[in-house]
Image 1 (cartoon, rainbow, N blue to C red):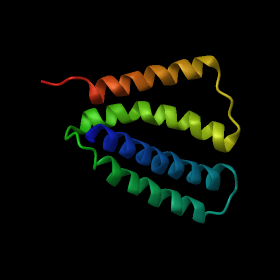
Image 2 (image 1 turned 30 degrees about the vertical axis):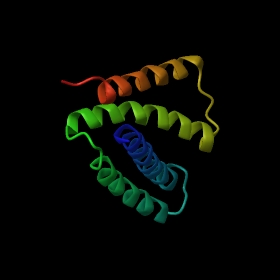
Image 3 (image 1 turned 45 degrees about the vertical axis):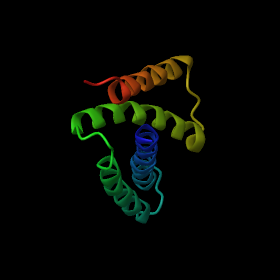
Image 4 (image 1 turned 60 degrees about the vertical axis):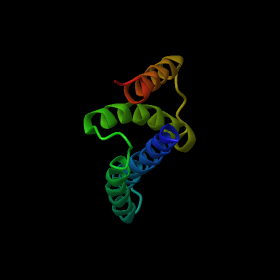
Length: 110
Protein backbone atom coordinates (compact mmCIF):
# COMPACT_ATOMS: atom_id res chain seq x y z
CA UNK A 1 0.00 0.00 0.00
CA UNK A 2 2.92 2.34 0.64
CA UNK A 3 4.00 2.21 -3.02
CA UNK A 4 0.46 2.91 -4.24
CA UNK A 5 0.17 5.85 -1.81
CA UNK A 6 3.54 7.17 -2.97
CA UNK A 7 2.54 6.99 -6.64
CA UNK A 8 -0.76 8.77 -5.89
CA UNK A 9 1.12 11.50 -4.03
CA UNK A 10 3.56 11.91 -6.92
CA UNK A 11 0.65 12.24 -9.37
CA UNK A 12 -1.12 14.76 -7.10
CA UNK A 13 2.08 16.76 -6.67
CA UNK A 14 2.58 16.83 -10.44
CA UNK A 15 -0.93 18.14 -11.07
CA UNK A 16 -0.46 20.87 -8.47
CA UNK A 17 3.03 21.93 -9.55
CA UNK A 18 2.59 21.69 -13.30
CA UNK A 19 -0.93 23.10 -13.11
CA UNK A 20 0.26 25.97 -10.92
CA UNK A 21 3.10 26.81 -13.29
CA UNK A 22 0.77 26.54 -16.26
CA UNK A 23 -1.71 28.97 -14.68
CA UNK A 24 1.05 31.51 -14.02
CA UNK A 25 2.28 31.00 -17.60
CA UNK A 26 -1.23 31.62 -18.91
CA UNK A 27 -1.50 34.90 -17.01
CA UNK A 28 1.97 36.17 -17.88
CA UNK A 29 2.65 34.81 -21.35
CA UNK A 30 -0.81 34.31 -22.82
CA UNK A 31 -2.43 37.53 -21.52
CA UNK A 32 -5.06 35.67 -19.54
CA UNK A 33 -6.57 37.19 -16.37
CA UNK A 34 -4.04 37.87 -13.60
CA UNK A 35 -6.14 36.06 -11.00
CA UNK A 36 -5.07 32.84 -12.73
CA UNK A 37 -1.52 33.57 -11.54
CA UNK A 38 -2.86 33.83 -7.98
CA UNK A 39 -4.57 30.45 -8.28
CA UNK A 40 -1.32 29.09 -9.70
CA UNK A 41 0.68 30.38 -6.74
CA UNK A 42 -1.76 28.69 -4.34
CA UNK A 43 -1.44 25.42 -6.27
CA UNK A 44 2.36 25.67 -6.11
CA UNK A 45 2.17 26.12 -2.34
CA UNK A 46 -0.09 23.09 -2.02
CA UNK A 47 2.41 21.10 -4.07
CA UNK A 48 4.98 21.61 -1.32
CA UNK A 49 2.65 20.14 1.28
CA UNK A 50 1.71 17.16 -0.88
CA UNK A 51 5.39 16.41 -1.60
CA UNK A 52 6.03 16.41 2.16
CA UNK A 53 3.47 13.62 2.64
CA UNK A 54 5.61 11.03 0.82
CA UNK A 55 6.19 7.95 3.00
CA UNK A 56 9.97 8.12 2.43
CA UNK A 57 11.59 10.47 4.94
CA UNK A 58 14.54 11.49 2.75
CA UNK A 59 13.89 14.89 1.17
CA UNK A 60 16.65 14.52 -1.43
CA UNK A 61 15.41 11.13 -2.60
CA UNK A 62 11.78 12.26 -2.85
CA UNK A 63 12.61 15.44 -4.78
CA UNK A 64 15.10 13.66 -7.06
CA UNK A 65 12.51 11.03 -7.93
CA UNK A 66 9.82 13.67 -8.33
CA UNK A 67 12.01 15.27 -11.00
CA UNK A 68 11.32 12.28 -13.25
CA UNK A 69 7.60 12.48 -12.52
CA UNK A 70 7.71 16.19 -13.36
CA UNK A 71 9.34 15.48 -16.74
CA UNK A 72 6.69 12.90 -17.64
CA UNK A 73 3.83 14.99 -16.29
CA UNK A 74 4.97 18.13 -18.08
CA UNK A 75 5.03 16.43 -21.46
CA UNK A 76 1.66 14.80 -20.79
CA UNK A 77 0.21 18.16 -19.71
CA UNK A 78 1.47 19.69 -22.94
CA UNK A 79 -0.12 16.93 -25.02
CA UNK A 80 -3.50 17.19 -23.28
CA UNK A 81 -3.82 20.96 -22.81
CA UNK A 82 -1.52 22.62 -25.34
CA UNK A 83 -1.58 20.30 -28.35
CA UNK A 84 2.11 19.42 -27.95
CA UNK A 85 3.21 16.42 -30.02
CA UNK A 86 6.21 14.65 -28.50
CA UNK A 87 8.89 13.12 -30.68
CA UNK A 88 10.05 9.55 -30.16
CA UNK A 89 13.04 11.01 -28.29
CA UNK A 90 10.72 12.83 -25.91
CA UNK A 91 9.01 9.51 -25.22
CA UNK A 92 12.34 7.71 -24.74
CA UNK A 93 13.45 10.47 -22.35
CA UNK A 94 10.25 10.14 -20.33
CA UNK A 95 10.69 6.37 -20.09
CA UNK A 96 14.28 6.81 -18.89
CA UNK A 97 13.08 9.30 -16.27
CA UNK A 98 10.32 6.98 -15.04
CA UNK A 99 12.75 4.07 -14.76
CA UNK A 100 14.91 6.40 -12.68
CA UNK A 101 11.95 7.20 -10.44
CA UNK A 102 11.38 3.50 -9.89
CA UNK A 103 15.01 2.83 -9.06
CA UNK A 104 15.34 5.82 -6.72
CA UNK A 105 12.06 5.38 -4.84
CA UNK A 106 11.23 1.71 -4.96
CA UNK A 107 14.56 -0.07 -5.31
CA UNK A 108 15.59 -2.43 -2.53
CA UNK A 109 16.94 -0.84 0.65
CA UNK A 110 18.93 -2.33 3.49
